[in-house]
Length: 140
Image (cartoon, rainbow, N blue to C red; front, side):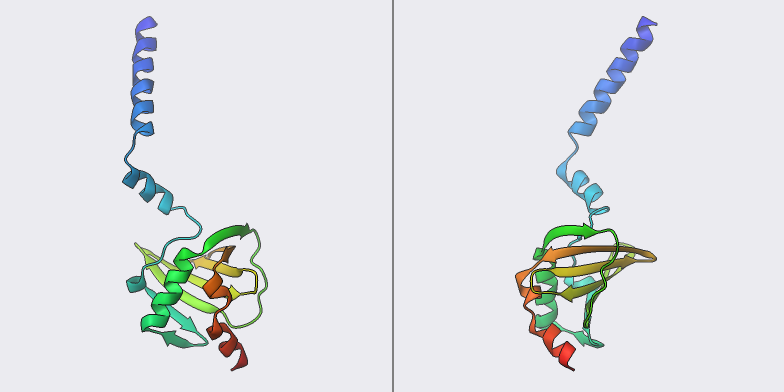
């Protein structure tokens, strides 16, 4: 009985030390699989507004602004947004994501879709909130 207790104590102690001292890269890769607002790469993304693909500087600026956006809140039911969304098709690893971005004065609503799973949340991104492309698409 005492032998098993000592063996289990040593095993749990070793497990605790291993788990608490994992390298940062391992922790970041585990967390990145489950994050709500992922960082997008320009090479693996396409940006579309009103059926038109954006390329070059506009595309890189929108992806940069999206990546720099500050996560505010998660919605448990997708909001009913009006207007033309900015659509970002992104591939991350083996997963394909579609982001629908709706601009408002005080925040940006993002609806993320992966297969049939839909997650909605809001961001604060000054450049996406005041983007002229949203206005020109709504007028067209």
